[in-house]
Length: 338
Ligand SMILES: Nc1ncnc2c1ncn2[C@@H]1O[C@H](COP(=O)(O)OP(=O)(O)OP(=O)(O)O)[C@@H](O)[C@H]1O
Ligand SMILES: [Mg+2]
Image (tube, rainbow, N blue to C red; front, side, top):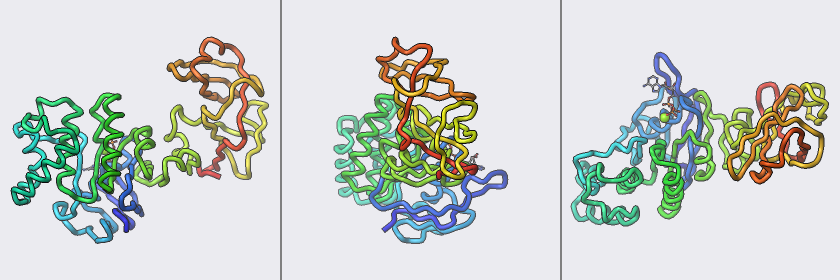
C-alpha cells in the first residue's frame, strides 16, 4: 500500500507554477523527506497532500483512496506547521485536544488519548501551562502532540524544527524519528536542510524548481547523485564539479579518464586523500575544528579538500593530493549522471 500517490499532479497560479506535472509514490510506514531550496515547491506539495490546495491537474491518492476532490478535514491526515500555530490563551492540554473537541470525540476517549500523547512527549508536567510559559522545544512538542493525538496514519510536517537552536534541533530529530518508528507512522516531512533530510529520511524526494530531481534513500542519493543539482545539494562541503578538457581537468595537466559524453567531473572533498600524488597550490584554508577545508588550485579550477583538523598547522603552500577513481562522478552536458 502507498501512503501518498501523485499522478501527473501540478499546481499553478496565474503568476507562477509551483509544481510541474509530477508522479510521486511514498510508501506506507516510511519517513519521506521533501528536500530542496527555498521556493522549489515543498510547502505546495505538502498542502496538496493535505487538501489545503487543490491541484491544477492530476490525481492524488492517500492510502490508495482517490482524495483529489475530498476536503481537507476528511482526508485523515494531521499537519505540523513551521510556526506551531498554538492558541496562546489555551493551556497545553486544551491546545492538544482542540481538534478532538471540534470533532466531538467523546470525553473519556479524549482524556485517554490526551494522557497517552502527554506521556509520549514528556509533557504531562506542563499540561496546565500556556504556550507562552514554555520553551521553544516544549512548544514544538505540543504542536507535535496535537498532530499525534488525532491518531491519523499520515502526518505531514513543514519545517517543524526550524525555530529551534542547533542542539535542540538535533535532539528533536532523534525523538521525532524514534516516535515515527514506534508508532509506525507514515510521515512526509519538509526541510531545506540536507543534513536533517539525510539523518532522518527513509527516502529523500529532492525538488528543484517545481520538479522532482531525484527520489532515493539518503545512502543512494549521496553515493549516486542522479544529476549535477543533486550532487551539489547533498553533502557538506559541496561536491567539487570540475570542467574537463581533452581528458584532463580544464587548464591543468591532471589526466582523468572520462567515459564517453562526460563534460563534468564530480569529486567530493572527503574523497580526496592528502599526502601522495600530484602537487597542488593551496590558496585558502578554513578550519572548523574537526575538519580543515583546503582550497587548492588545479589549472583553471578550484578543488575543495576535506582534511582532518589536526592538519591545520602542517598544511601550507603545496600539497599532494590523490583520489580513488571509483569515487569519481561523471555528468553529461545536460547535467545527468553517466
Ligand atoms: N498562493 C500562491 N500564489 C502564487 N504563488 C505561490 C503561492 N504559494 C506559493 N507560490 C509560489 O510557488 C513557489 C513554491 O512555493 P513553496 O511555498 O511551495 O516553496 P517552498 O519550497 O516551500 O519554499 P520555502 O523553503 O521558502 O518554504 C514559489 O515560487 C512561490 O512564490
Ligand atoms: Mg515552505
